[in-house]
Image 1 (cartoon, helix red, strand yellow):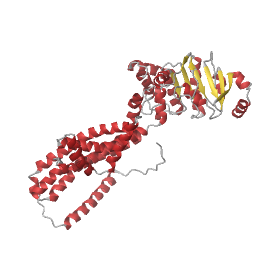
Image 2 (cartoon, one colour):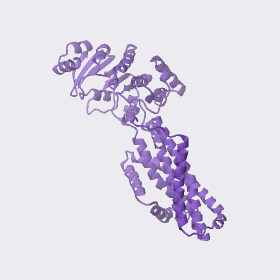
Image 3 (cartoon, helix red, strand yellow):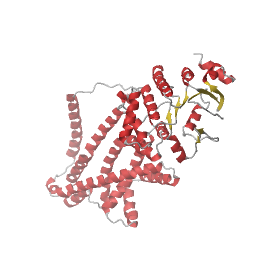
Image 4 (spheres, each protein chain N blue to C red):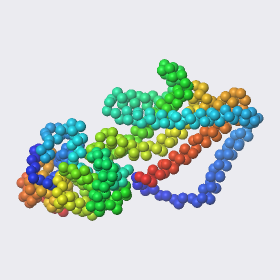
Length: 257
Length: 223
C-alpha cells in the first residue's frame, strides 16, 4: 500500500528517553497523589506470607491462557471456514455462534456454560470448563479476525488459483492461508492479551487462577491493595511484552507489503 | 456464435469493449460456464461440470490482464507451485523446469524476487512463463498488455511472439492491432456477443466485410 505520508525526522535516543521519563513521572504523580489521599495502613508482611499462593495462581493463569490460545485459534479457524461454507445451515450456525458470543458479557457466558451446559454434558472439571468457555469466547473474535484475513485476499488471486488448476482446498492451503494468517497475526496476538485478562473472570466459578488467588489472600489478610497491586503487576508482566510484540509485528508487515 | 478453427495456431480476438471477447476467452479457459452451446478443443469437447472443468483447466494456460502472480511467492515459486501441486512434478524437477524457463526469457536474475519487486512487464512475463511451464494445449491471453506502458508492452509482446514462433498454440485478446496483424494466423472480430467476422488476418484487416468491423478498425487504426 502506498500513501502520501509525510514523515518527520524520528527523534533521537536522548529525547526519547527524556520524554519517556516525563511520561512515567506523570503517571507516577497521579498514583502517588491518589494513594496519598487515602488513609491506609499498609501491611505487606501479611501478604508476603502467601506469595506462593499468588505465584501458583499466576502460573495457573498462564497455563489456562496458553491452552485457551491454541483451542480458540483452532475454533476460530473452523468457524471462519464455516462462515464461508457453501452449506447454508453450517454458515448460519457459525454466524449465530459469533453474534451470540460477541453480543453477551463473558460473565454471563461463564455462568450459563458452567451451571447449565457443562452440567448437562457432565464436564465436571472446572479447569477444563474454564478453558472451554474462554476458548469459545475468544474463538468467536478470532473467527472474525481470520475471516477478515481470508476476505482480504483479492478475487483476482482466487481466479488465478482456479486458472492454474488448484482445487478449493489447495487454494486455501497454498494461496489464502499463508497470506491471511500473516495479515491476521497482529490482531491475533492482540486477542491473546484480551484472553489473558478475560481469564480473571473464571475466578467466579472458583478456578484457582491469579485473580482468585488474590481474592483468597485478601479474604484472609484483609490487605486489599497489597493483594491487588501485585495482581495488576502480574498481569502486566504477561500482557506488556505481547503488546510490544504486536506493535513490532504490525510494523514488519507494513514494510513487507 | 459458431466458430470452427482448423489448422490455426494463433488466433487473435479483436473488437469493441463489452463485445464478448473476454467472456469467450473465459469460457475457453474453463472459468465460466456458457448458457448454451459447446466448445471443442482439438477434438475433445469441454464438459461444463466442476470435476471435469478442473481437469480441463489443468491442460490450458491462462494469462490475465494483471495480478496473475501470487504476491507472497517469489517469481520462481509462482512457477513451481502449479508444477508441483497440480502436475505432480517432484520439487527438484519443478524447480529445474521453472529455472530453465526463467533463464530462457532472461528472467533468472529476478527468480527470487516477489511480484512487488518486479516491473509490470516482468510480472507479466513471469506469468506467461508459469502458463507455458505446464506444457498446455493452448495458452489464452486476456489483454496481457493493457495494464502496461509501451516499453513494457513491447517486451511482453516479444515474448508472446517468441512462443508463437516456437510452435505454442495461442488465443489472444488484444487491442494491439499491429501485433495482431503480425502474430495472428486468424482473426475473429467480436461485437455484441457475436462473431461478425472471421478469417485470415490479412483479409480481415485489409478488406473487412461488415460495417461494424470497418468502423472499429477505422477508429483504432486512426491514431
